[in-house]
Length: 308
Image (tube, rainbow, N blue to C red; front, side, top):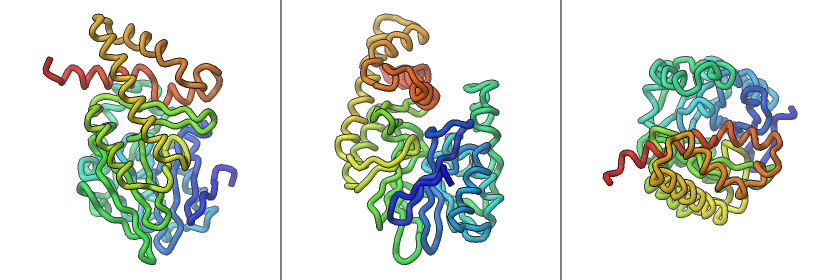
């Protein structure tokens, strides 16, 4: 299939075709004795992911595990549908996200407030998963991939309080979710993802430091794809966070409201990103996944919580 890319080590990148786009959100299949899907994509992407797994020989009873880095709808919106397609699969998520997969009503209500009429087009509806099938991870945990191969889970908040990174013992791949930001392979751009309400700069920088300490061989971004240049990319990830926070602090100190703060930060960061200078379709992807309004709002929310 044209949306499946082999990455070596029995790992396959799946373009989930979020909202009909290519190159927006990736899921990953680790194909071994106990096949494991990392990230489901959205609910509307679930049939695309199922067809990709089928093309790789994974049938309804073959998938052992589904694990999500966190429960935002572009990563986990398809969990309920995928759980239905693969009745033998265990669903693995950090303990702070588990209840929302069993009962998505609050998560969907807050997503509706943020996205409004765009919700159905971009994400669809997260269907509930039987709580008996959900395994909630603590700050660390292990997922058995068979033949002694494991995925080690490492709690990595800052982007979201229910976020984990996942390290493959066989390949050294680290699935970074959104904790290291949004990467555009077409341009090599990297931009932070700092949405409300969970963003916290110090915590996010701590998670990036943890990723560095794990010494991964490769980073697998949910947005989007594999990156071999591990140390420089993680350093850039931390740098981008600091720049966006510093600029937002400046806007706040000048008394700008959110709209004007967004305009200022957008203008002062534009030259950092080739995608925005080009103004092509990749710029749209950036704005969808790491939009300046969402990023600045998340930083503002965090700044409001800090005693002055």
